[in-house]
Length: 547
Image (cartoon, rainbow, N blue to C red; front, side):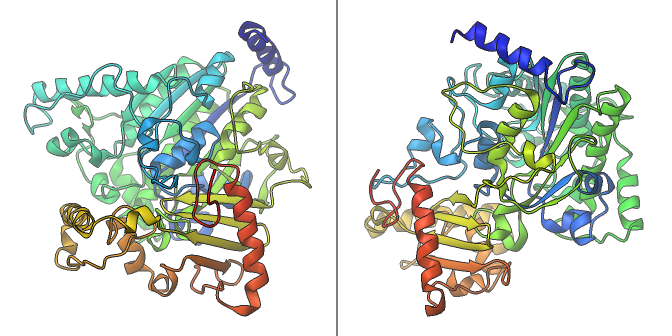
């Protein structure tokens, strides 16, 4: 089918979509948040004050068995944008990390190829306006050059601000190449990743700035169908409560002449309301700052209502990864298990759904909701959630979900069991000791640079093992923190085979893989993982010895 005919049919399908209002094609707003621990959701544990987010869960559909299929920022976002498991990433940067045996290593090495389908590209080709605001972290292609270095440290210096603005425009143009009509308030990665921002103190959360751009996009395209991907930097580091108390004029553009007023409630009011609700400071300020994030959600919803768009705009809310028990960067529940919500009164049926869902389902869901048929050559691992959102019983919904990160692979089944496999490639351990020790030393230096409070806690160890992310012998800080902050992991962290009954043991404290009573279950789960591995690129030791 010729592309023009294909697009015309898709446009007609969108116009005639059964859930459209007065002939208008439906919209989608995706909130993709960052490093939210479970207790930052008020409706789950009652420790945070998040009335707007709580309303999404209580008046919309709350998926209590949702997963980030890879539990760090970049691959999580890749999967949301493409509907694919991260191991399908086609870029050279990703393939360079594949071991000699063919074991792919999903980390922060993600990118989207120039000719690769993702939901922004598909939606734009089907008549939708597409917007991206906030944290990208899925690689830059460098087509428009590279960022400049600031000439000083003063964020109010016009020369510094000129460079920061140049870099911001560069990021926006680069990200727009991935299918976006509008990109604003863009962070290439984490605020702390940009040396210019760190040098000038502009490595801050600036939700007023981000939200201003989100509102601008909605206002600009209010008369056309749109999809907004709003990837806020909250609640990732740097310290959120610390940023709440900084000058609100401070942004990645430098020190603004005036603060951005009238977008979000005053910062001091965020702290007041959170404390008045009984919220205590904790978790690097994330509990109080959850109210800050909640204001962002409420403000965007308010804009949709003001413009009369709330009755046909589906809101999807997903957290890129969990941080409970320092599980980020693992296949454990503390990293991969996250809340997911969908909201649209009159379409989305309120209530909890316990089916296994994931970020790979976001792209298929918005295609289905908007009446868009994806290209035949767009491979997706996810499925549309729309039948579940409408409250339907789906007899053939998936019975298992696949997780991958570093040197681990896992499967979670709908009966509440998880099998996790940890395999270190022989090519890693067979390297000369001198090479491994040098890699170990560099990794230790980086740990102490980024986390100076750990200096002296660990020493160089010629017997250092690879940890689950496979960063270096002895492990990266994130891997080490998993062992430090959740002592039960020490008992089984290095076990090659790990089996957990999540119904009885949600924090995965007891490995059942060596328990004779669970031998049959272990073998069953291994076969399930083998079947999933057979469908994704790469080998994986005995569970997938060859492609």
